[in-house]
Image 1: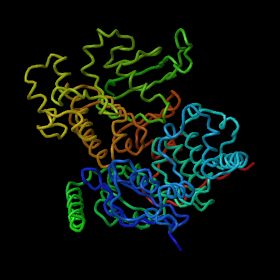
Image 2: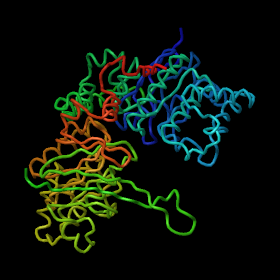
Image 3: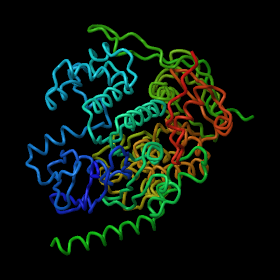
Image 4: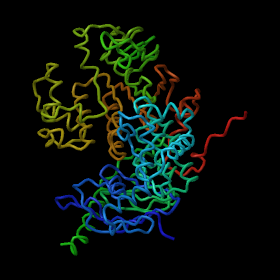
Length: 292
Length: 276
């Protein structure tokens, strides 16, 4: 069976030749949640953008391929690629306030995509959106659909965007830090919703986060990133049972835990960072040889 | 017990509610803090936790008198500072320092790090031996001396927060308000900054109000915790007691909502439907 998403040996560079993605390989199977975890600059958001075909113009993919349900995205004409990505993927962004148009009501913003990209009738789209609002436990869809984004709380806005993401029955959702801006109690509700919808709809999710706690709760597989390189890749349960890479172990020790305050919040050891720098330098050297 | 550094009774703060401001005229007042009572013991680190809109930052600003309370009293070392005019507050300012969430916006982009750290020293008549004092401040927060001539944009997030700490501690204050100081930082940097603050607070005998939304961080750093919700104190107690035996349902919910970095298949289970 084809993986839902299969990224193979993907490298991307900035205009000055600096690599920002370093031979990244990862796959997301149908119905599976794969977490991409790392600190700022790790390239996790960049990978999500590459999948959705929205990399900034300053970043150029120079090697590797991405397959969406077996279709090689690099081999498609731009228009066909956009249509395929539009039909089969969706994004749950970090900040729902900037992702929503402040001057339009929620209703048309949610149905637009179904009508314009998927060619649904207005009626069908409206029905579908209401069904999804019900699934994200919004009990007064009429009011919400008529509201402007600023009239809803942060948690409500994120529910709206989750409903919108699932509405078109995408095969793959890229969730980019979808709960980072939320309070913990709201975060828990939103994670619960994403997990439930993901199970019911059998959607594959590429879940970008900096929080190992969220990784542990939401994902089945995980890729740990540093400086655009996958340093460790494992089943989530295995990663937490026995992290292999020194950086993964350091990240775990740095993450605060209220159950174990003294053993957590350990600053990352300099030797770990030096080791990482050497690993990156070596990988770059090996990569540059055939690439001039 | 020794006299607390801060003693707060019946504290209320009302601020203009700009969402209800008429086109012409004043915005009506909204009560943000609705009567708080607590003490901050000398030399203690107190965590103030709450979700957005709980009033935790407003509480911090009222303590250091960036805001004037509308009712109740704030006593600092026994002295009532609730309605002290700015001129009389000024000599107290050096004892009441702040570290902010986003050092990018609280450090002047056009000044060198040395000049940023020196500014409060000069203002407080400590302009002699500036170079030595700045060097000491940098060393205290673990930054190399070469950083003195750098600018804000040449520093990483963690280094900028170290500068924020160096500036706040340069005057050897009695009290430091730390408002979400690690929220924007990566976990590895966060751990460094918290370890630094923990060490300096102990060495200098500081009293710290540590405002955060992260209970895991508070458990590590603070001896006591104030849990806030909608402008009121839900629960205030010693940190271990709060975690081991939370009295209020809201506190229990807050703790249970933290995703620990460990596998727990039950954590994301839908809450059981209440029997009809």
